[in-house]
Amino acid sequence: EQSLSTWYSLINIYIASGFISKAIEAAQRAIENGATYEWIYARYGYLLMQAEAREIFVEELLLIDPDEFDDEEQIVEEVIAAFEKVLELNPNNIQVLHTQIPYIIEQFHDSLWEKFGRLVNLDTSGYLIRDVVEQLYEVEDLTPAFDVLIKQSEENPNNVSVLLNPAHLAIVDDNSSLAETYIERCKQMTSEKSIDTELQRLTLLAKYEDFDHHFAELTTVIGAGRAVSQDDIDFLEESIEVAPLFANLYITLAQAYLGWQDFDTALEVLQEGNTKADASPEILRLIAVVLWKKGKSEDAFTYLNQGVEQFPNDVGLLTQIATFLIENDQLDDARPYIERAEVIAPSHPYLWQIRKMIASNMDD
Image (cartoon, rainbow, N blue to C red; front, top):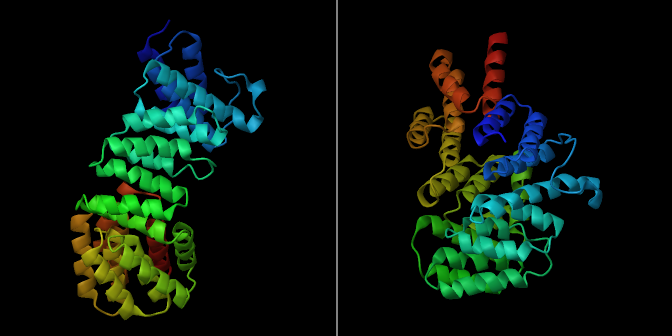
């Protein structure tokens, strides 16, 4: 029996070299040779997840009988089995439990509600619970989940994080009135901005059943450079009234007005968002873009510099400064910002735009 450190080193060497299949085989050999450690099973499960996501062929499976499952289900079932081994060794491994549950939902395993109950008991923050709740849309009967979360809320009537959980579940279950009941209880108990932002987002989902779909559709349309309708503008403005802390609403509404070439209104929306919403580097960047279009270059740089002070690693802000400097024929001054952005995110789309811009200027 080889030590955990030996297998740990071998598996990590394969991972670092990009050989996922070899790393999976090494994890399987480790288990077959008696290295039945929590870390080995966990790493095996995560490697299988990568293989599934990247469509990497896995030659053989160790923990399940492949003949019992359809081809497309086999790796998913092996992931579930690998994480089950982890939980047998350490029932309190909340990260593995949280990772396993979506696969259990996908496979309609009978163990779902037992697992969900364990997660509820372990997750004191509620963040992992809510992440799982938002994946329950395909589950027909959510009664067991309501039973667990309502019981938890009754046992912790003054815990806002706990009360948020049934509010999320009610929205997933299209029960707006129940969601609003819990949201109002939460509002009366907290003034914490991060919680207020989440409550406003939930209020939007309760008020507009298809909010996520409609909002995603609008961002896609605007991102494609197409104009939106007055009804869409009205929808975004009404949404801001409900959720004034939600920065993305201001960003999307401003982009809609920019699509209409209404720079003054776009600027008003962005400045309101900068005052009322959660701090957002994208709002600051867009304010600078509008000011630049209006010929107010000094004001544009003021907002960008303010943004970089608050968000020193934001690639959007760094590349926007570089873009303006290049447009001002100050390529040498732009280079430090480009280099900084390249260190942070070398493949960022904004950097490709900058490179294209520089190449075009050189051709000219």
